[in-house]
Each structure stands twice: as C-alpha cells, then as structure tokens.
Image 1 (spheres, helix red, strand yellow):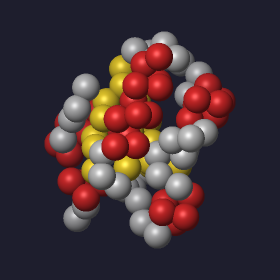
Image 2 (cartoon, rainbow, N blue to C red):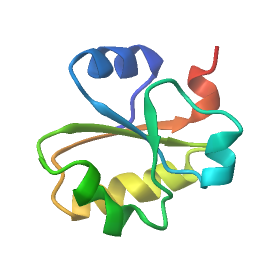
Image 3 (cartoon, rainbow, N blue to C red):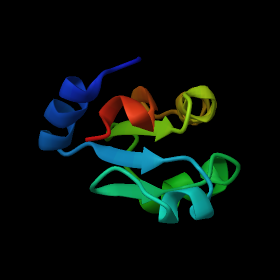
Image 4 (spheres, helix red, strand yellow):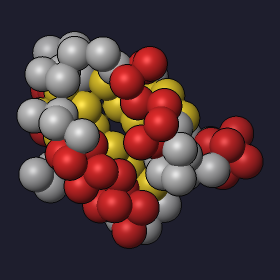
Length: 94
C-alpha cells in the first residue's frame, strides 16, 4: 500500500518499522529519522533477523520509489502482512 508522510507519522506512532532500502553509502549521506538501513538486495536474507513478527507494520522508502516498490513486494512475498511503501525519501524531507 502506498502512503504519504502524514500516514508514515501515524504508523510510526503505532510502532511501525521504517526501512531505508537504499545502499549504505546513500543512507550515510542522509536518511529519515528513526529508520534502519537494509539494502533492497539484502532485504530477503536480512529482514527476518530485524523484524521477526510478520504482523509488524513495515514502511519502506528509497530515493525515487523504484527500490521501495521492489522491497515491498519482496516483503509481501515473504509473508509480511502490513507493508507500506512511502516511495521517495524526498516526499518526507524537511
């Protein structure tokens, strides 16, 4: 499900996990507050060690929205039930 910044803030207040799916280099150059970095290429192998409960609300974002869409579909395929795609990080930048 695609969401906007307002919805992100509501979901974060409900305990959602915010995941930046860009590369670690991109993440280090700036990211949204309270996000964790899991590269889209590694998300399939890493996510279960970071988010064990498949009912946890997960929000993904990237630079333009392409990688977050891929990551969201990967999470859904892995059985995560509450996956939200914020799309481009710039949509929530200050």
